[in-house]
Length: 448
Image 1 (tube, rainbow, N blue to C red):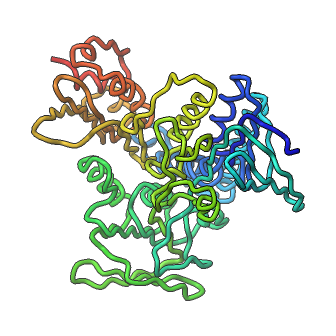
Image 2 (cartoon, one colour):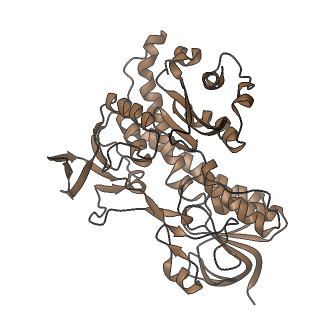
């Protein structure tokens, strides 16, 4: 007889970890099967390694400001091998942390592959090829996502995906980045700050097409100041790996451009990792955009759930974790959390950062309030005056916000709460903020 569990999760990323831990906290016997790295894409190929690199590049770039503050630093230099060690250590700590979180929560874990053979059974194969079958009352699919490639382009030793680029041990002299959405812009920021010659190519008419237009425009100015060559409304015709360089041919309007660099980075998005044969056999409904789920994260097959990137939508670690908690809550009979994608904050970890939450579309029915970083005393003292906050109101209630500037990722948190609670202008005017702080930038939105 197969060993029995209340819940089996396939995938040890943020969604799977959150679901299993919550189910175990409710007394359920839970098992997580992971076949690549604990912590999923976030810990191994996304949030953690990229933010480790961006931390290093920002500190190096900020050295230029110190002279104005009366601090002289002679001949600073980049030690990329040390930067890589920092990145690798960050990944190791994050992966160990995810695994420890499961162990501390009394969740069983197994490393290997898990194939769902029926709505109540999973076939597990370990690294040695040993196979076992487990049964479960509930199964959660948390397969994650993978890089999305252009149909005519294939990766090579010098044409890289973001996963591949994170493995580079030597800082290149030049790189051409195809795609100026979140991943492309973050890598452009990091490499430009470290002194790499960066070319950024975007098919649409502006970088970060899904962010606030003014915020994206401000960041474009900053990237240009860093020396990034930006081409928007530009189509990649083809790209060639010559062995010692890459040659990208780009059509920008009526102009044909040829860009030569050490490497090319393909940042044309990520897509759900769908094991289609498995889904078809189980008759689980899905599209290329992801697995279909209801408000409880259950698929059309009773007892089988899906969470995180595999469902499409915003591919963010905190979104996956929330979906995992909702699924586990439903399994455990605790439906206390509801899901609203409009309340999920999103951050671009460029320099300056861009963060947003809620509905940031401008229309005749929406009132937009704006407060500039340059009016904030802390921003002036710390030489970070390039930025602003926008708040969007409809019928006297805040419906969205966007921030571009220093610490935007941290500052979006209170505005996320305000949007989730549909707070009124009157309530927000009663918000008391310590002085002097960067957070006082919000007072310019709600005063009067």
